[in-house]
Image 1 (cartoon, helix red, strand yellow):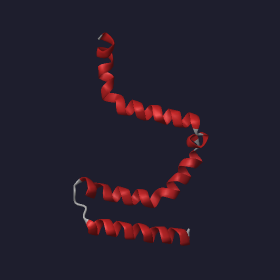
Image 2: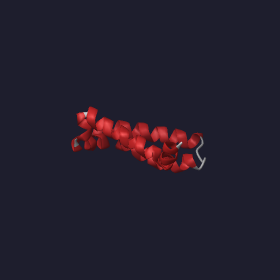
Image 3: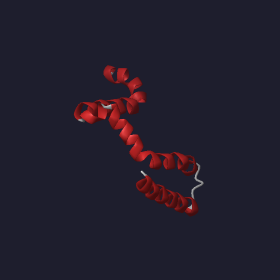
Image 4: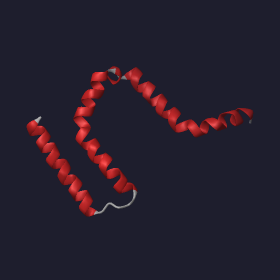
Length: 88
């Protein structure tokens, strides 16, 4: 009864609270997660995929994706991956 009424406003923040709890749990269990070098390396390793995902997100959300966009994105990601591996 009364406890439920007091907790009801917190339901609105549930996704943020769960995210914060997961972040804290990860920081406590994975020591590398708290080091800045980890985040820099992560950014370097996954930059190409993140850039591609960021560019395609509005297209997917608006429902404008078709096979040509998907094929082009796969081709571009393969070419970028091959160049990245060869050129460093």
